[in-house]
Image 1 (cartoon, rainbow over the protein chains, first blue to last red):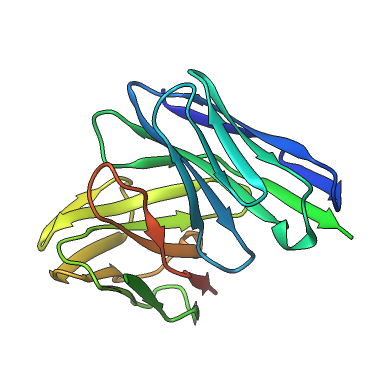
Image 2 (cartoon, rainbow over the protein chains, first blue to last red; image 1 turned 30 degrees about the vertical axis):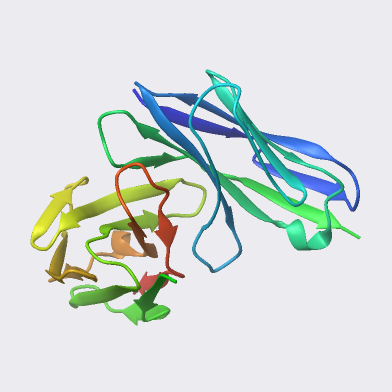
Length: 110
Length: 112
């Protein structure tokens, strides 16, 4: 069965304290892994797409990496405005659907 | 640039009442369209998706239905709401089956 598991469920960081969020997946024929940011009461905002193991994408303080079994979202020197829930999703090879994890709620304190 | 609009932002409805949530996309043609529901502590659950006018695929059996009367319009409906229909409903679009989804800002539905 296709599955996406994100850890930790919640993460509290001091401003400037770098860390990583994990997304483990089991899917038949991965056709893309997606990272989203979601602020309270808002829809998810697209961050990155990764398609193959070894691929990396960067945007400001965020860097996403992909292996055959998991993806990491690295946050370098986070700021309070990085506080949000980060969602991971995978697309299986034979479908248009995205399967989402339950997210990691990140809080960054000044 | 492309934009997606969802309304209303919040809705409180009694059990047994009908529902109609609307979503429109601007700035693109023939998008793939999706309805997701997000419950607290759970991942986004795909309800319906559409690859073209009048083409609807249902993922979860329930008392909801979807329609796509125009190329960039997607409607989620119910004839009689249940308490369990409460949740955060999100509409999304994508260019094609390889592209990421882009979400609207959602509708918070509370069934009382």
